[in-house]
Length: 301
Image: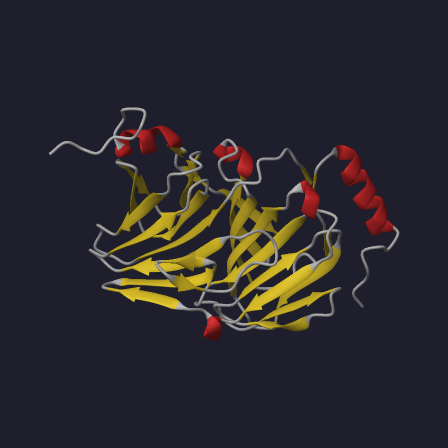
């Protein structure tokens, strides 16, 4: 049987292959801060821009207060706590939030024009999760800060044969979770037992970032297959404005694996990052630093 062709004379698979890109597999760099924070750290430069809208992801464990109260502006700071976290993560910010994040929770802080934030483990806690910086387009950088707390008890779960996937944000396979306070994004926290599989559909124009938290993951998208070893990540780009694509994940090993997947439309704008700030220009960075020094982002007591 002949495969269907589009108006260019190419088959659907051929057209999709030309639009979908997969970066090289990249291992996170070790990042240790003091005696209480250890991480595998990923930065957007390692993925040649294909990580967009993500700026950085740290896969970390944290056992004691490390960073203290600190500012953010021009980005969203996202905390995803894995379910094996032990204890509580005390969260405060100048929006008036003051509560504990629990194992399996997600906290999305859209910093926008600027906010001061602090997260620290309660005594005896061991926090295991991801700290993520998500870029905001220039038009949203001056917007008012907002926050979203998604409790683990409210997270919808997709359970199939051997697959368990928490839909932390957005939508997958018809299962809908909360929407981010900024641009639309889907965040999946999943596990696969030996021999099981799971698929997620990327909408037209969406990119994805996939991380193997533990175990070796087999990936297939647009007729291409990649092995993603534990502790490594890759990015998937889809330049088509009309064609979606399906990411197929499989566990062909003898042990369980855990993965995290982010999908969203890229911002496609130049930016400058300096520590906790992600702004459009160097002059914007200088201005937000001056505003913070002058106390204009607020203070935490």
